[in-house]
Each structure stands twice: as C-alpha cells, then as structure tokens.
Length: 341
Image (cartoon, rainbow, N blue to C red; front, side, top):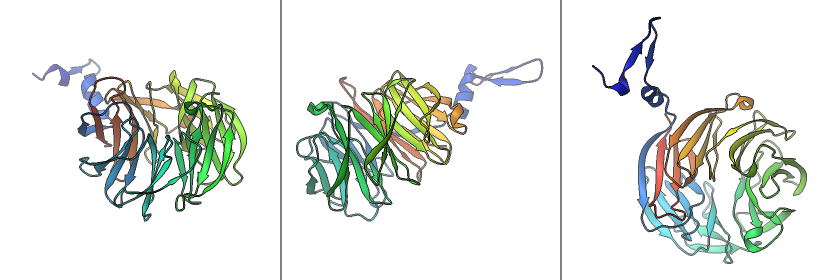
C-alpha cells in the first residue's frame, strides 16, 4: 500500500483525488536547486545585477559595505569587493567596460572597471543614492537620492550619463522616502514610488517634470514596482500591510489587489509566462498569475528563508536568485537559486 503522502482516495463517482502534498509538488512553480552560505555577514543585502558577458552575478551587500561576486552558472562565491559605504543598485551594460554601483554614503556612487572591479571614478550626487532604473534606449541612469536618511524633507531622482558620470538633470519630490522606479520603454514616462506620501508619481523623462501623482489607496508604504507595458498595468508591492496593488498605467485607477509577503524588497515580473514573484522577508515567495491582470491570482507560496526579500529573475537561465539577509538576527546569510519549470 502506498504511503499517505502519495495515497489516493477513489470516490464513488470514479474521480481520484490525490493528496495535497502531491498536488503541491506537481504545481510547484519554483524548485530550489542550490544555496550558498555566506558566514560572517550581518544586516541587509540589497539588489542583484547579472553580467552575462563575464558570467557573473553581482550582489550589493548594503550593510556589509561590499559588492559580492558569484559565478553565474554554479552560484559559487568568487570574491568580495570593498571600498563602499552602503551599496544598493548595480548597473551592468553589455559591452560596457564599466559598472555603476549606487552608494548612499559620502563617498558617492561608484564607477568600477567591469573586469577587475577597480574603482575608476565616482559620481557626485545628492547623498543617499539608492534605488535606480536604466533607460537603455536613451542611455540614461535614473538614481533616487536625498530623503529622510540624511535629514532631508525632500528626495530627488537624478539623471546621469553612465558613460561619463555627468549629471543631466533632476526632479524633486515633496516626499522624504522615495523607493523603486519603473521605466516605460514604449513612451517617455518614469513611474516613481513616493513611499512616505503613499502615491505613485509620473514623470516625463524628456523634460524631467512631474506630470501626475496617483494615490495608492489599498495599502501604505508602496515600495516595489513592475510594469506590464503591453496591458497598461502597474504592479505595486506595499509593506503596510503586505499587498500587491494593480493600477491602470494610463489613469492611475486601482483595478484589484491581493495580500503579499511581509517585508518584501523586490518584485520580479516575467511577462513571457505571466508570472509575478514577490520575495518576502518572512520566509516565502508569493507567486501570482497575471494572465488577467485585473483578476490577479496567487498560485503558490514557495518556502524560501527568513530575510530572503531581494532577488533577481534570470529569464535566459529560467532561474530566480534570492539573497537571504541576516538582518538583526544571528541567521547565516545565504544566496538561494530556484529553477523555473
């Protein structure tokens, strides 16, 4: 007789209902392939970047003040790059000899040699450089600066030429906590999370002028953002409470919302498979079906690890990689790699 996890109950009508365990396994949208532990790390990690040209995966270790380098295929930890105050976002461009790393400290955002990771320069901006978004068509890097962490009542998004480090302009917001950005590739808009005032700002990238502010009504602390440009929808992830909020990208109207993991710090959108992944610090990844974006469906809660709240989607490799931050605990830092069936 089969064990209970694989047992089936034959109903009178002839239907077979498999156990919930088997169904969960069959439907699992992610499979943990391997993990790499990083002993001795404390505090939080921030964002990843992939360097396909050099077969590397890069991770900003915010509180450890380092850039961590991994082998893209095996996940093996290769080296630690020092010389930062608090790194956050990383810009890697195919064919470019340099990498940019936003740094919220006084030593400013760094320009690194893409092969050696040696510092080649810095970009003088307002302090507290953090989240960023890259407009590949125009070759402009938009970086969030200012805010409450340095005692400012306002924050800015500053536009930078990533080849020269030259500042091209800025837009200021009456908000002391600005988080993630999203760029409209088929248009000229930049969407900016105004986290303190609980709004989404819309900016014209050509003029660097704010053209709209839309309230995010279902939840507070809107921080992460993903854009479904083809269907004119924005996915916002809020932290109070954990919530995925869907908005019309033309009007700002909220179309629907669902609970999300707590303490999330990234949202990963795969348009090809209509999947939205929200890694939460409480220890699981919320997986959502976006086939009908105005009827969002949560399809799984995939176990991860406490503090695993930042990640990267690698579509070419059909993988998702998460960084588990120790935070204020004594947990061991780790990097988790999941395959997408």
